[in-house]
Length: 141
Image (cartoon, rainbow, N blue to C red; front, top):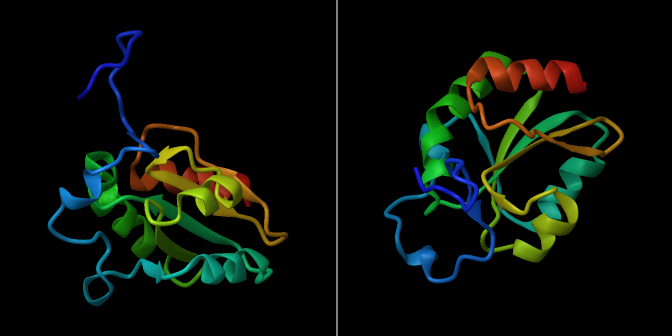
């Protein structure tokens, strides 16, 4: 991975990377191949937050290698959760101001658990596995 100034390995992509949008060949969690539901607009994202139902939202950028790297694990997590909680993906690089203001997003990927009261709780770990996502969701809800 890319090392940061303090020598740590980087595990996320900066939200303000410009030009990167052109460096990917497909979207993540494509609707016809995925049980992860797509959020197509910021209005839809707000509806989910206001719905009174818990949910999990991954805010991602399709060109971010760390978003790409967690695609399979997040997909398996969505399958494991089944109908208990809705699991969504939201492309955040086209809605930067919105995701920063509403979905705790300063880098990609960012996973939030949305509580029934609409509070978005950010998943702070860099361990992006089915078990880790499940544990965080259960602890948060």
